[in-house]
Amino acid sequence: MSDQVVTRFAPSPTGFLHIGGARTALFNWLYARGRGGKFLLRIEDTDRERSTPEATAAILQGMEWLGLDYDGDVISQFEGALRHAEVAHQLLSEGKAYKCFSTQEEIASFREQARTEGKSTLFRSPWRDADPASHPDAPYVIRIKAPQDSTTVIGDQVQGDVTIRNDQLDDMILLRSDGTPVYMLAVVVDDHDMGVTHVIRGDDHLNNAARQMMIYEAMGWEVPVWAHIPLIHGPDGKKLSKRHGALGAQEYQAMGYPAAGMRNYLARLGWSHGDDEFFTDAQAKEWFDLDGIGKSPARFDVKKLENLCGQHIAVGEDAALQQEIVAYLAAAELPALTDTQSGDLARAMYCLKDRARIFPELLEKAHFTLISRPIRPDEKAAKALASVSDGILKELTPQLQNASWSRNELEETLNSYAEANGVKFGKLAGPLRAALAGRAVTPSVFDMMLVLGRDETLARLSDVANPD
Image (cartoon, rainbow, N blue to C red; front, side, top):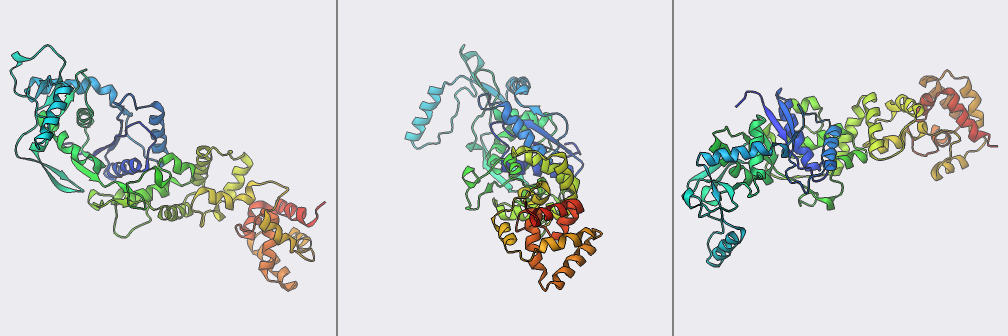
């Protein structure tokens, strides 16, 4: 086996990139990237009826959103069909596989009789050791000769050693009667030809490993390191499915979750590094190892996801967050920001990042900078304005005109005014929020004034103080 670690993610293009697949991709990406290895992407598109270009595009978009870059070109399993068939014919020529002429009806009849007699329904082909001279001129499949005694041990990095009795394994079909390879053969040939050293995938594939090992051993190929990870369950403890809500990576992007938070959360979903909950990509690549993966299914918890996403937004770089917000608006099919709004948002980012768990919350906080005059207050904000007496805003405006527009001087001006008028600052804050943002809940009044600038702030206050 190569010294370089090579992992792969191999989804079937029959739908979006669901969250379980995204975590599998992430684990493979972390394992390879943390060891200077390669992370490859293969689309398992052999099921021509169910595979669609749209699904392939959705998978690629989901990977791009999550920032899971792969090495080389995307590999199509379907395009390797001739190579897969070549391996089946090699095993046939070496006597490690055989032609089976049993019809579907004969196999069904065998199983029915076995059931009646209370015997194993595992099909044993009468053609396994037949003399080639007795072969009829009829359609056939190519089956591998499975070992019939002893055991197969799957040395799994997550599940431990899993032992399977070989008399429980059938002579698996490699090539169908129309000459097309089966999925089990294609996976092994592709993994071998791609140099895959570690197969990290869902534990629903664990039983496949024993059957795939038959092909590795028959071909004299080195078996990769297996790591079968438990599936993700919903909060109710059942396998994650549509009834638990959004499943596709792109759906989470369209709901406004930041990719860094999703990566962090998915990494923690079934894997742990001590008690660490929040960590960066660099830390995840350094820490991630197969022995940190638990054997029990992890439960998807939206509150934990949102908590981590909020932490990542808070420490995110402003420019990167701005780019991701642009992508979020496109994914959610919402109107794009104008150039003016983009500039205003960039200036405001420092006071928006705290305590916003997802981008819609951040944009709600940014409402004051994304709107234009005249400001239409919502119901709660209108109440704050209705309670304004003695023209607070009218009196404040000339005082603010002379302020130097630094935080210190703005605070001094407003606090002095409150003191001189015998009111608490909170009495000023409500009307100011309503006038500047049209909302009752906003970033601090001082932050809004600094972001909006002197002219826009005074214009908004004047609109309310002097309605025509």
